[in-house]
Length: 100
Image 1 (cartoon, one colour):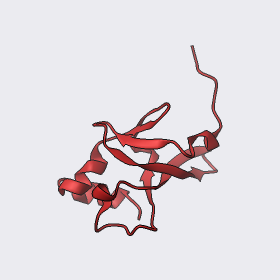
Image 2 (spheres, one colour):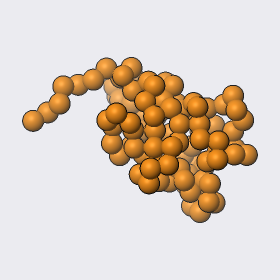
Image 3 (cartoon, helix red, strand yellow):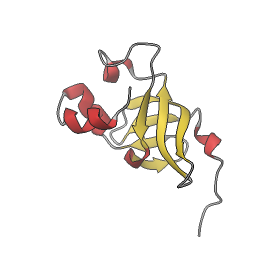
Image 4 (tube, helix red, strand yellow):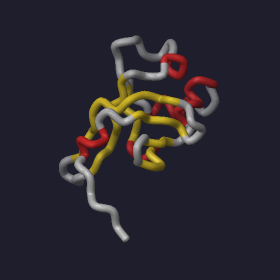
C-alpha cells in the first residue's frame, strides 16, 4: 500500500536527527534538481552547535545531501556520517559532501 505523496514544503520545519538519535538541525529549505524532479539536499538551520563547532558560525546553515536521508516521518533521520564531523573520523567523505 503506497502512502499519499506529500508536498515538498511539508519538510520545512522538521527536525533532523542522526540514526543514533543526535539532533543535527531543522530543515529550512530544500535543494531541488528541477530537470530530474528530485530533492537533492536539505538546507538546515538551527544547527546542533556541538556538531558544527568551528565549522560554521551561528548565522550559517548547511546543506546535507538527500541521499543521507534514511527515513522521513515526524522527524527526518539521516546517516550517522554527520556525527563523524564531530569526532574527526572519516572527515574527508563527510566534509566533501557537506556544504557550508
